[in-house]
Length: 171
Image (tube, rainbow, N blue to C red; front, side):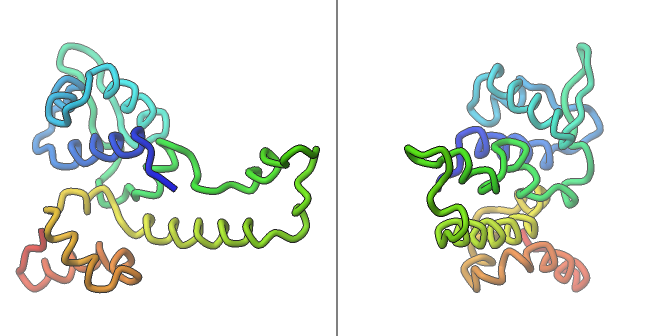
């Protein structure tokens, strides 16, 4: 299992948009310079994200990109699905039958059950983390996730709300 370059760089572009302060759109050139990517590659990523409904674009000399909705409403699961597709899909087995027309494990496959379970767990964890959470400092995120990795993803967004209610800032 691996995170593709497209998924990694796409998430970095989304984090850059989330950190942007102001109403003006963010230019491709500015994202490219800030993230150390080529403008052409950033344009490709932003097109994918726009087609997926995650970002919006404005044309013209003063054009650029905005998040399509608040960063707190865009999950990492949604972004990764748009950028790279689902982790595991039911048609996977039909596309990998081996030398035969149909997989010999079509009716009873422990591997398929394993991947479905892992996919569900991954979806739950990544659905609990939003683009808003990508604005945190790395150390803050590591501290939170290292406490209890199984629970941290599910409480990540809630921790910030609790801290803000107590007048604290979680970064």
